[in-house]
Picture 1 (cartoon, helix red, strand yellow):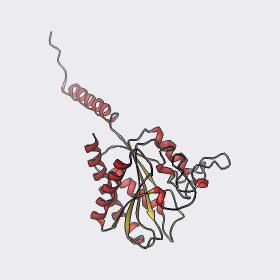
Picture 2: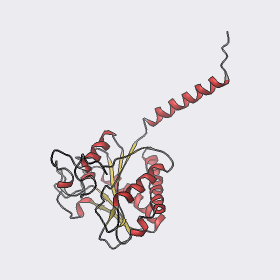
Picture 3: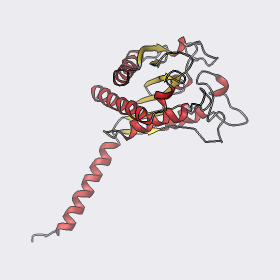
Picture 4: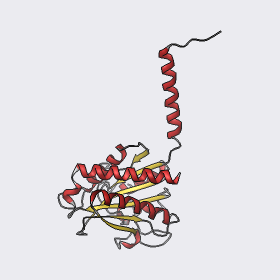
Length: 243
């Protein structure tokens, strides 16, 4: 005996199947984590946290929508140095102060829970006197070649789209800043890029512009949007090639 289904029920079934299919696919997509700087104490009349977050938000809103998340400690007073501190100083990263972990530690912990495939940290440089962009990767990493390729592609894409000078890809061990060290190599390192801390296989940190020389450029929302969209486009292309 034939079974007749009304048009409205048929539409509901198709929508449900479509939604279920979408969720099944999205769960298998590689996770991308954005880590905008939470530093509010860098530069004169300049908020690195808000600028970096503006770029991260623009990237996440840009098409296509990926399986992506943001980790950010700004305003979370239950963590020490949640709105300041250096990514290369033990006191501001791996240290526990008054029973509290740092803002950086919180962000990496949250990122690790998401099991990201790629992790992109966004910062603004300072004291360089250059309107430029730099890429950083972790020294001694087994994914060195792939991370260097990803960082190079990202900074080249942003440079071409914005006119920021491309200063190339550097190891985090070359900055000579502060005292946080990778326990594997013993060399100075960026806490957020250390493979002993961050479980993502692919990890890069971008220093976008200079907080003095590039100030007017960086605080412009349109430029933040452009940079975010360019980063999303290049990350998407890179992911497509990796898969």
